[in-house]
Image (cartoon, rainbow, N blue to C red; front, side):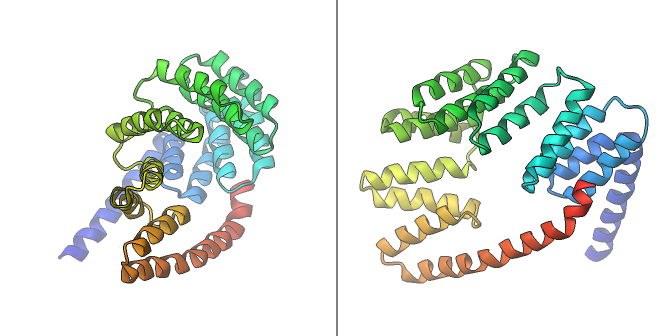
Length: 277
């Protein structure tokens, strides 16, 4: 009986999505991108761009660029973002994404230029302030980075990324109390935030509080077993506690990760032509 219900659920979902595609293909593209179904998302994007009305074209080009960035096709992503800006040179998202690519190229002046253009078009876009903060962090200008993170939090005091970036910078600066305050705020807002558990566990390790460190990193590991840094840290804590059986189990999980990565690479090569053209 359960098998029949599952089949019916799949058919209903497929029917709804087909109707939704005809109604608003851009939203369908966004849905599929959010679930990492990038090939299907690009098909929906192409449907947007090939059919009137053109109201979503700039959003479609930007989303296409985001998908290409995800697969590290940066040059072609830049082309898509620029196409979006040709349609509307006040559109804030392509500027933000161009800024992110500029950071990867270590072109920090150009990155800040684009983040500022994003803010000029959308003064309440807190992620652009985080973009500026990231460029200063890369340049080891941590006080300037904190200034722009605070700007983002002035706009939205529940902005998780802002609190996390602030905690990370305080940790780098050696201000443990301020780091703990920011990271605790993150976990109040989202108790599944892996990065916060990782840094908190590191702080506890430095304080020689091994039991607390192990609990925190165990939580991070349960949330994301594909994070190599988290897995190795957890394995270290297990070994320190003499739990060699659990440490060996983590190692077996680690040994499987390169296989997953090679599958991802192979899949990326297969989809390359479909994602770009």
